Image 1 (cartoon, rainbow, N blue to C red):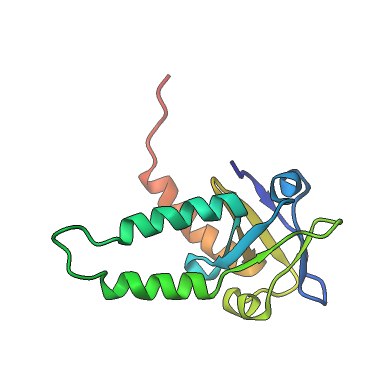
Image 2 (cartoon, helix red, strand yellow; image 1 turned 135 degrees about the vertical axis):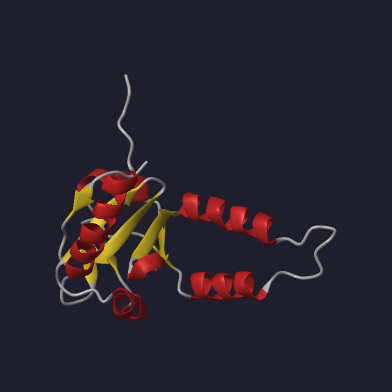
Length: 147
């Protein structure tokens, strides 16, 4: 499980230092691709394989379905065409490919958040904007915890 918020910087070569607490889990390899809301999503290689199988199962037509729907095909194309696999270097850095940096609007200052089964990489300003809106909605819909 990935948790927390971290603020690494992107260097001039497009490399990002992964948070130290996640490096061991990601050392064997990872996949980075486009996420929702113009962030990047990062999975362990095994986690991405599991997600891929879930997506395949969900997209398989059942006996009553003639074909996989267009929106599903479109989503799969964008998602997988933008995915890159990599292995962090000995210092825990990964290269974020130019198309993904452009998609997420990544500049020097980044935010890496733990999002349960994946990490997300955000431009720091975009994350601040998103968080200010999302926290308001989160507070408005939350319920009091009961013992």
